[in-house]
Length: 207
Image 1 (cartoon, rainbow, N blue to C red):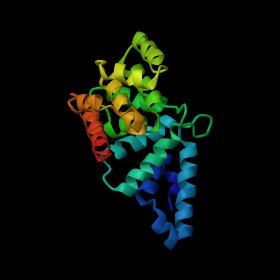
Image 2 (cartoon, rainbow, N blue to C red):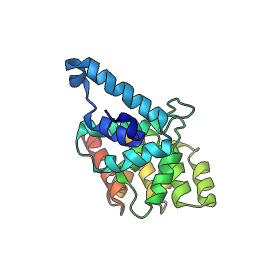
Image 3 (cartoon, rainbow, N blue to C red):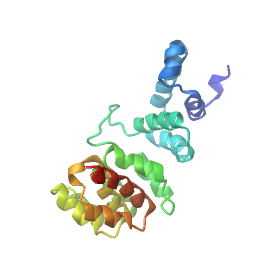
Image 4 (cartoon, rainbow, N blue to C red):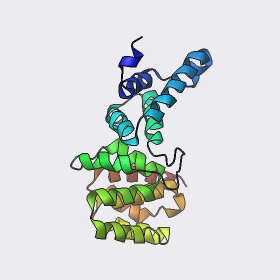
């Protein structure tokens, strides 16, 4: 009732609030399928910028794992290129715009989400937000090099978002984990970098 009087943005938040997981689907598949169909249709009606504008603030505040998962699903739809998932070259334009609007206090969970999807695309997007054309071109050239050489170089750069790239790459590829770099990042001035680096040390100690 009254669904036609609500905007896709309002409806998306309501659907996300009641979106179920596997247990709910098993107990009531018809209702959950209806939610998923509405969820999909709403996202198709919205631009990537609208999706990020609606989902990102809620994602920063969310503490419920189920809600966080649903919000990540929505944010993932904002990275599509030509309507398809592309993890090799995700479209972070809407994310960059949102981060640029909050440059002084970057949305931590959203930035983490970007780096978890694709560190290379994320660091280039951050270069566009926080750097200039010269820095952006420099980062674009450097990131094409040998991964170990790149993370050694980026670990010593002044920008926190390049050092976050180092932590993200080591998280994705255990062969890149160098104890000296992990220790360096654990002392980083940026909390995002420190937090991600602290998660890397335990696997090294367990080996």
